[in-house]
Picture: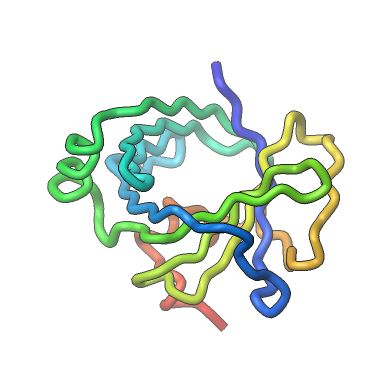
Length: 156
């Protein structure tokens, strides 16, 4: 069984600039039950179906499968809950750690979050200067939560 262990941080936008070209992501959810979420994603020209289990701290079970992009687009258009989550993802390395930086659009415009996947919950993580407040345990920042409560509704 695959396990996802990640920490999530807000981005200090004044300190972070993309170092490369990002990839457009459009994603939606078929299930948002706390015990399991089922996500459909178009990442660039590739489609994915992802099943995630319930969070236990910063860990949870995760399985991801590549599916035909045409089928992913059809699921997004016809079956996924609204609104869809739209973002551009940038991937960067800092001190040997791979970071995924998501700049959100649509109903979540203005939100910028960085995630680092770890080997264990106890793994040491060196933060770049552009990493702001940690929001790993704040459910509002889960992509699945942004469906029912978009950032535009609660940003400060």
